[in-house]
Amino acid sequence: MPDTETGELAAAVAALVLVVAEAILNVASKTTDPADRVACLKAVHHAGHVHAALR
Image (cartoon, rainbow, N blue to C red; front, side, top):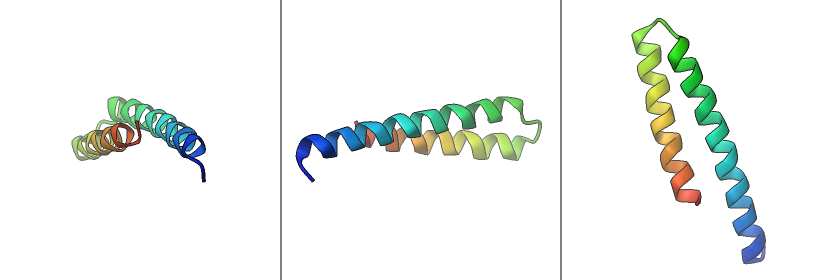
């Protein structure tokens, strides 16, 4: 796979990760269970690392 295609794929996956992270953050703001909120926030944190690695 040429470098341009690899970069485009990484950018597309990074954008998808960002959308998923935003959705999880939205769920975290609506849950009433503190353990669920913590789990969601941890997932968003990890998704942020994935997003940064792909950029």
